[in-house]
Image (cartoon, rainbow, N blue to C red):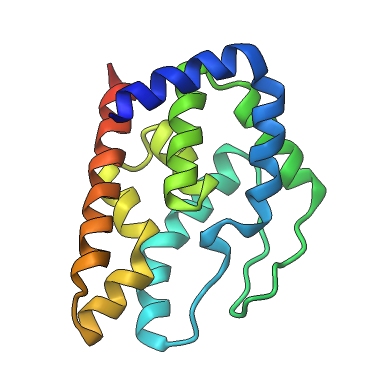
Length: 166
């Protein structure tokens, strides 16, 4: 099913690439990697999984995002958004399709970029995208509906990765 979505996304990108990139940019300030927890053990996990991705993005995309420990969306420097836009503009249609679907599924363009460029694999992307839910399940138990949704997401990310590596 994801391959069909990716193929449709490529068709859409070929006709509306600039509009799609502009829409994706609107969500950059709310990237899930910008919102850190307050619990010490959760923050340690976030540091372990998220800090390398933020460092990679700073180096490879030349973005320096402001993070927060609360729900207020932090204001970002325009140069970071401009550089993210350049990054997306330089992706092939196939890469941008994978980026688009991965970023929507993970609520993170930074994770999507790292996945598309092969810095992380689907499993790493899944773990980083779901760090809070996985941490909660570890501490308070798993919920069947949430577990099923996460497994569907993991499968989609694996399909996106296979599609990109073909």
